[in-house]
Image (tube, rainbow, N blue to C red; front, side, top):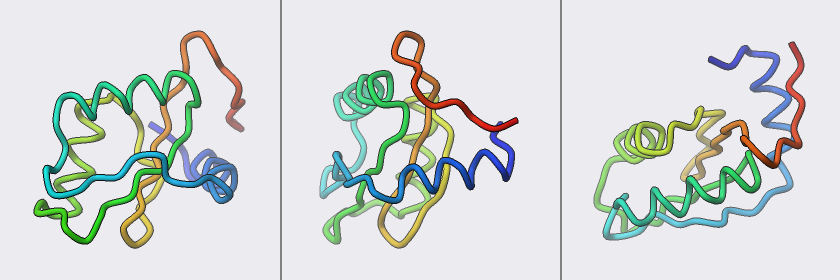
Length: 97
């Protein structure tokens, strides 16, 4: 679990990032989860936007992304989700303790 201090740190790091995935009409599927997992391994921190035409509830999208990728939810602002997952091989972010 991330502490408040760690989440603040990650939010500041995520501020300048652009969303690299979009959840649309089809919702979250296995293929998307796999791609997001690979992106998390490469980057550790990423933004995902939920499009207007997404038929799932925002909370359900967040829940399934976190469950399927094993990532930590940093924050949800509007229709943008910020996820963090420590990389096994490309560790770049050092979280404050």
